[in-house]
Image (cartoon, rainbow, N blue to C red; front, side, top):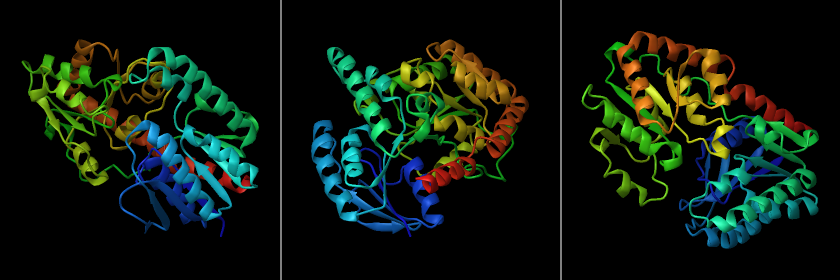
Amino acid sequence: MKRVVHLTSVHKPNDIRIFIKECCSLAKNGYKVVLIAPSTEGEKTIEGVRIRSIPILKNRFERMTKSFLRICKEARKEDADIYHFHDPELILLGIFLRMTGKKVLYDVHEDYSKLIMDKGWLPRWLKKPFSVLSEVAEFLAGHLLDGIIAVTPTIAKKFPKSNTVLVQNFPISGELFSDNQPCFTKRNPHVIYVGGLTLTRGLKEMIEAVALLSKLTDVRLVLGGNFIPKHLEEQVRKLPGWDKVDFKGWISRDAYKTLLTQCIAGLVLCHPTGNYINSQPNKLFEYMSAGLPVIASKFPLWREFIEKNNCGLLVDPLNPKEIADNIRWILEHPEEAELMGKRGQEAVSSVYNWSIEEKKLLKFYEQI
């Protein structure tokens, strides 16, 4: 059996893309898989994947130094055939492992050079130098490592065609769809967003939109996830409309599936920043897979998914009134909304699903 080690200094061991999709897919197809990730739970084996923990370090500097050194140590202990890492701060480790004769893959989840420009915690004068440094590091990764696994077509174009594969982060077909879910005319007037709770993902505009609707309908916003940064929670709780929010905190996949059956639309309202405009957010396709219509930012790429399949509505994510008007349309047209949801679910079943992307990942591994 070929030994594969997945490495991350940022993501949790139960990360959907890393663990549930990639690691489990490899384990089911004959690879001996180890995942090294930040955790407090020690070593355990789940679905044939051995998970090894490194300490969780919340300080960014410590994470990029102490975690890096710890991952280096643990990675060398495993002596794997293939190393597959998921964070740009591990590029140096990847190049070192490649120089020792190992096969090394870099899984690029974001357009990091653009993402850095949107980081609020980073001083403005440092953003451009860090962005350029990121581009240089990824240029070296693209030319020195054995393979690049890109999550979107835009990211894939940044790397050499000869050793790059597009493995999109589409949902596992059927995972979030319930056969016995109630029809839309019997559901509560709830809309949902689950994911990272940040200002650039439209958190403030979602709350302001339900506030605008509060005098007309009993609409509620179901929120799941963690606030980033943590002090953001105190800020948004003061907004008009927070009394219309059902905040669930972090939720399990099973709880997420149940919540989706109780709502009539999923919200994906990222701001028009460099990284988000060409992204393919997992939540968009998860809502579709659950049979929910989506209300999403009117980016050209997202328009292609939503208008092509007639599975949702597009809005200006910076305009709470426009968001509110589209939520209201969904509330007043439950039969049409349900048809949108069904079309989205069919699109995921036939095109936008992990089973198709899994084959591309496995083929790439065979080539490597």
